[in-house]
Length: 193
Image (cartoon, rainbow, N blue to C red; front, side):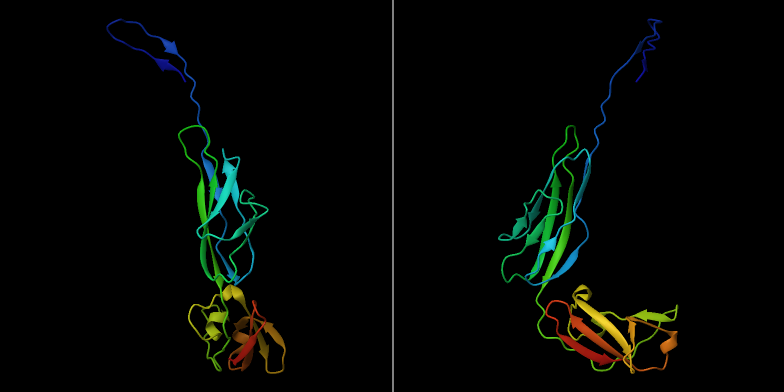
């Protein structure tokens, strides 16, 4: 890094060098938020980068367990028995040399208690500007806060031909059957579209 001294009163100039060390910051990425069934184990998907070399997971509630331990980036976590609710997991890296602190990121995992499964009997649906609509569990299952990740929707024609969960213009004016499966318990309910 060259520098110049141009002190006008002395008429002298000089050149010097200096070393500058730039430390990379530590980076933590805790992954995507997840929805789980009560009692299910979650696999955390953390990554670290920059100058980080190690990391540790912490949970916002006491009593759960990490396997093999809380320093594995892909640790599995089992919540306390009977737990339902939200856990915030924090992935924190080591504190590298220099002025930058550790990398920190959070991921939220929600554990749900599925109690009873009741579908709306009949639904009318509208297609979007592309002449299709994806049918999600929250459109069919009664109740508030239906976590779409914990249910599977299957649509059938009246002849029991499966069509996935997307309705397009080919089915305008048709009656379809919807089957919703609770992925936690395996219970089902059905509706007519």
